[in-house]
Length: 394
Image (cartoon, rainbow, N blue to C red; front, side, top):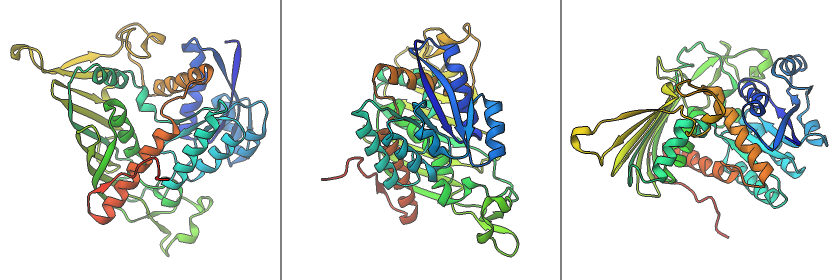
């Protein structure tokens, strides 16, 4: 650890806390060529960002993210803010020669995502790296699932099934937070959690979604305003309610460019489900299934075995030769959600130190954005819709 990677983070709420834990932990778990230094964090509230800096371990704090980009002692900008700010921050950082890690989805529109991907490609020529933070790629069981697919263990993939189920807004009295406003979040369950299963299935299969047939629904059309400080007062009706302008649930069928077909479901109205992400792949030689509620396990069905021996087997992904696990505990001692962010940061540091492009790149994240856009357009038209190509015709 002869050199430092000096980090400035924008935003300090839920994702800011997870990223902070990762930056604090990564060099204690992994032997890396760079040592992460938590230089400064920015946020809009003077009191809030000061408290967050003290709690999360940042050396300094500010209320203006632009000062982080202007500083010579910051090498990387970590963006943990709502989607409406991603493009402005990332573009400024890349133009200033800073590495960037940006939370998902990459942007609130295809146009913004295209501009960000183009800026990242241009910056890469000067050795500047940019990565989108799809953390579920870094679950060891998911990384092992991808390896099994690459090794041909389940043959030709025919079916992809993916769902991400939550229930945190089933109460109609839950307030109109930023995630329920299109101008801030871009979309609802589709972009917030649907983006994860889109990226995850494309990652493990090596195939891209090429067309979709979708429907979306908003079950609760209005919600109480969270308070005067939210900036929502102007849109309130006489009862102190504001309009929900995003989807509560999104479902779609998909065709993938490798020949597989898929079903996808993302909802915040699955009563009793807190963070239930599941992916199953069915192939010509076998099947694989991952369930986030059993994070340290991978289910594997080997269809090549004799019929008397067939059945789904449970692989406990805690061995030292499993992805990422050697840095942690002895076999059988599971890891958790927070480790996915540490693995994410670890891979980013390695890429920066070795001059490689980290994944998922902004180009990868643009492809996810194009799928989100196709789903939205399909839901509006009630027709099968093709995913636009990432590269536009000249």
